[in-house]
Amino acid sequence: MKRYYKEIIFGSVLTILFVGLIFWFGRQEADGYLKILIAVITVFLGIFAVIRNISAKKKEFASGMPTEDELTKLARIYAGSRAFIYSMYLWFLIFIFNYTFSERKEMLGIGILGSALIYGICLWYYKTTANFGEE
Image 1 (spheres, rainbow, N blue to C red):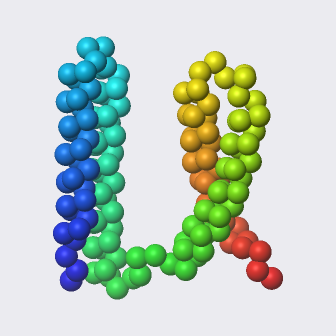
Image 2: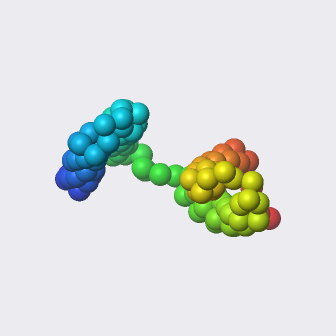
């Protein structure tokens, strides 16, 4: 059975980095409680995701199933390419209408979250329809 040392070390390093970030926020900003709370939630979600991923891989390996099927691979590839193209249009629109944003942080946040949302929608579309344009 494959050892999962790389995943465990990677998860541990990320956890140490996030804990260090929490302590840094605590020292630098007296009113950074919201940032500390967000960092703590992020750390716990990251630990949960790593543990769940490792346990799912062990279970699939023990049962003899492949860890990823062909549909999922194709859906990720096609969703990634479409999301990249659509995100370029999103950023183009954001830069055209940059005067409507009061702060640059809003513009950056909308662009990043919009790109992630576009990828999620494209991935959902390709996984549900399996329409990859091949006829």
